Length: 176
Image (cartoon, rainbow, N blue to C red; front, side, top):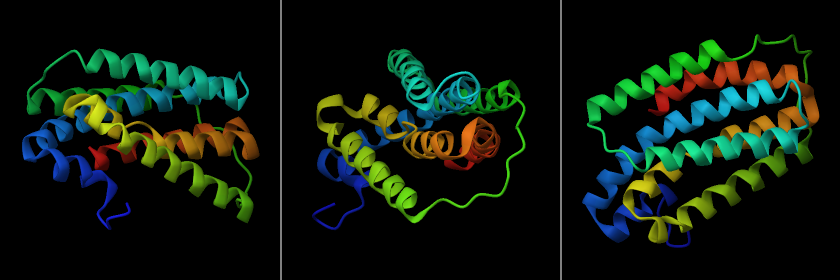
C-alpha cells in the first residue's frame, strides 16, 4: 500500500481492533466460499471454457458469501464448518487428470501477478463500504484460486485445473 503497510491490516489500523476481530472471523468463514469456488471451477473446467467457468464459479461464491454474511457463528462452529467444507470439497472434486510437464511463459507469469495485485487492491478498497463482517468474507475471496485456475485452464487445459484444485483445497486448511 502507499503508506508501506500490508494491505490486509489496513482495515484494522483504520477502524480499530474490534473491526479487525470481526473481519478475521469473516475471513475464516470465507474459506468455505473459496472451497466452493474450487469445487465448482474444477467441475466446470471439464465442460466449459475458462470465462464461463470463472463467471459461474464467482456467482456461486457470491451467493455463498451473501449467505454467510447473514449468519453469526461462534469461533468453534466456524472452524467446524470450515473443516467440513474442506473435506466435502476435496471429496466432491472430479478426478485429477494427467497433465504433461508445462512451465508458464514469462508473459503469463506477469499477467498472473498483475491480475492478483489488482484483485487484492480492489477487495481491500471495499472494506470501508462493506463493514467488518462482509469485509472479512471478501478478504477470503478466491483471488489466488481465480488467477491460477483461469490461467491454468486457458493455457494448460482442464486436466491442469483439476490437479490444481486437488492440491489447493487441502492447502486452504493452512489459510484457515
